[in-house]
Length: 91
Length: 495
Image (cartoon, rainbow over all chains, first blue to last red; front, side, top):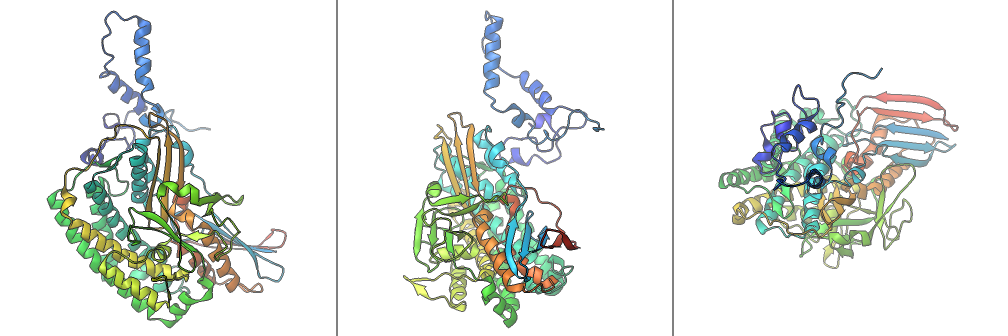
């Protein structure tokens, strides 16, 4: 998650050969860290051979990829879901 | 009926509340020890990938995340059907020993120790870690802080982070130990052994050398005959990281010995409507209420019960202390082993013997040539779907039990946490202390209330773990209520 979340921790988890889970939350100016992560991953996702595939088949491939991530909210917002992305105070 | 409420109770991790009900004569009618929070890890972890659990469950607690981390990776070893290489197991245990040294040190000097070092009647403003430093000297205070710092450094070196470690993975450990790290850990382990011996000397002088405290330790108030649980190796020696779970009866005869995976066959859990925390008991004996003795399924899993359940300790200096412990407390032998000690306040002493054992074991592991072996991981190839992981947490046997689908997505999670094992015994200790110390509306004095609190504090309870609940602020509130529940008096002090 490090590419979409705040640094400053000194990257202890990657240094211990473990993936970053984004415990410092969104960086300044970012409201939706999960959307940023999806955007980052979207640019490197490999759908395989797509020439000649119908739009329906392509959608199916994307759906299959998404289904391989079982808990999107729990993965992309593990430490940040408690913070409101709407901002402001309820009156 | 009068009602005395001690809420929240202090110097434990987490949050608890004690209600003491008096009858019309002003004697104790009943006590309720309640843990009023619920955090729900067992629920919200369902649907998560199993391999996330070592990092999620270590957030249950900031005091003993290492215990949850290891119970969790051991459960994952099973769930993925992989046996970690020997070096990985040794690194896990080494890491765990560093944690035990710091955790037991914290309890003695900061949580349980103030009651003894300053005395149960000392004003609460002094009866804390700062009071301890004042009494035993600044130099000792510095040593305590140094001990915690150097061991957290080891935890960070091995586990990746000093508070919530990340290096445990199914089938092993994510990071090998370098030669330089090993040498540094060996030095730290030797310092730990010195520190543990010093701490035992402090305990000798302050507690065992003081007849008043010794009487308190041996008094009937803090005496309970229950079953004792602990993890032992193949020679029935205590082990914190791995082995079989052994339960001995109040007379010291082995009652059960089982693999962690079989825990559900031997342990059942009772739910009471007035608290979120469950009451585990021995299934074969059954739940007979909050009573001790051989006929009651109540057991404890504490430093004291771990010593009671083991035949001996695996390291030489700790074994010497083990012998001295049972001989001093006058335990007889049965079937070639010491009979259990049931004086609950002796748990503090047992904890320090465990501190020495952990330091010595850490030294042994740091000197093991295999500890720097780079083969630390076996990659899982399949999903077995069920895993049970057990370690001895500082506060008692900790069990993580996971069930998953064939993609290793969790479908069921059960956690039996160290403190939970002792919930019934803690309730009984509090009741007994209250019964002995409150008679005929006698004015509740500070030291008296604290003695009731001492009854739970000796268990080093961690209710944030046990209910997986967040700790609140820690002032002490006392409500004395009339027959109809009307508050007659409300006392409050800051923790």
